[in-house]
Image 1 (tube, rainbow, N blue to C red):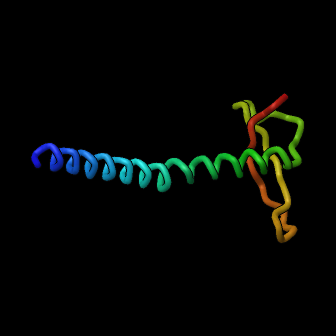
Image 2 (cartoon, rainbow, N blue to C red):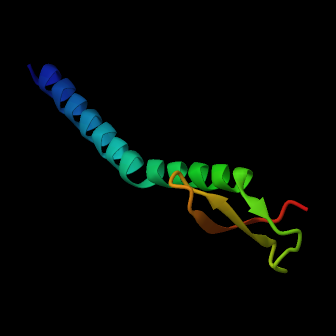
Image 3 (tube, one colour):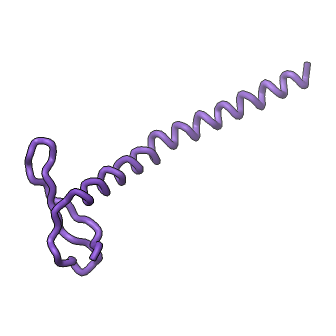
Length: 78
C-alpha cells in the first residue's frame, strides 16, 4: 500500500509541475513569440526609407486592415 501511495504522490507532483510549466509558457512565452512573429511579418511587408537611423534600424510604414498608414521601426537590412 505504501508503494501505491508513493506512486500516486509522484504522479500528482508531475501533473502539477506540467500544469505550472504550461501556464508559464502560454501566459508569458507564447504571447512574446506571437508578437515577435507579427512584428517581423509587418516589417517584411513594410515600405522603408533607404537610410538607416544609425542604430541598426530604419523607419517604415505599412497599411493596416482598415487601410490606414501605420509607422513602425524595423531592423536595417542594408
